[in-house]
Length: 289
Ligand SMILES: Nc1ncnc2c1ncn2[C@@H]1O[C@H](COP(=O)(O)OP(=O)(O)OP(=O)(O)O)[C@@H](O)[C@H]1O
Ligand SMILES: [Mg+2]
Image (cartoon, rainbow, N blue to C red; front, side, top):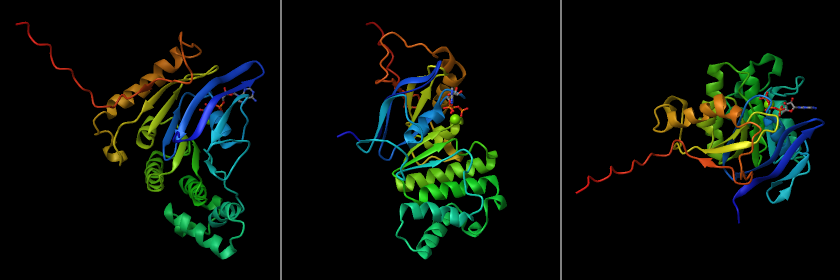
């Protein structure tokens, strides 16, 4: 049996007069963290919305846990780019509300207790009674993360969750998510523009060409060992090769490969590359006797 939790099988999204992408195939294994990287407008959010069940593909199917998805599910929690909190509720009420959807039979006191515990996990125990307007951008995003993790989803879907934050807050939250996700062996799919974020968090990084007619050009396997942290990432052997590979894609190949399907291209077998794998140098040729 395959270990895939999510299997994306030939999905397409078309609008009248425009094909955003066509024939995308990929999978996300249980416990795996997959990042999707590509330029603005190539269709990343559309892919995530389809995985979340918020949007239907024009073609193809998404199989989750052996079943074709037909709509949103609490098994797949989304963390949006904006925090998407309910402004009239406190942080605790926002988390408790999600919990009450997951556990309709729980009494109020139990919901409150679990919400408080979830907020403490992201370092926000002290701010539980504050409303979103009283919280900083980073704190609001933390509440969104607490809310998503509290319901113990089988999969976490994240659409550039840190992009609106300052660099310092972003770094702290990346490390927190990295820790929480690793502890729980959480299956996750995340969109990011930040190459270091992808290298820190992902097991595999999907590279998408520019749209329209975007496609997955390559799957980059991140072989850097865990635990990774932002302070030591750039000292790890292979880090620079990995980073350069992804940057080269974003700067050049995402454009030069756009729209073209190389002869013999098989969308079901996107090439895998391991730029950070230890390089084995072949021994020098022996001198002729
Ligand atoms: N209703 C629509 N009609 C036509 N095109 C649309 C419609 N909605 C979205 N699109 C197009 O679909 C494409 C993909 O949008 P999507 O939001 O998925 O991109 P993205 O990769 O997430 O971009 P970004 O990095 O800026 O968030 C865009 O080029 C957008 O213009
Ligand atoms: Mg987007």
